[in-house]
Length: 101
Image (cartoon, rainbow, N blue to C red; front, side, top):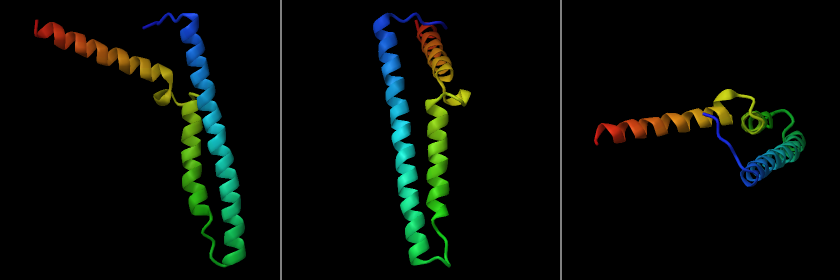
């Protein structure tokens, strides 16, 4: 299903993509700063018991998936999947509507 966008729609979609990328970089920067602080706190307070890697690992996983979605690397998270799902739902609605008329 090919959608023809006018210039205003293209601008809106590009602006939304830039906002998503900006949000990812904000998340990544927070991840780096906070986990660096956690590493320092862990090493200064209890160097014999390392715990900093737990938030590093789980938040890192979240950052990874956020990046995959924003940069549309995984097909299940990208625009193509969204458009296919929208078409599927619209077709089902049309089929159901025609069935009851």
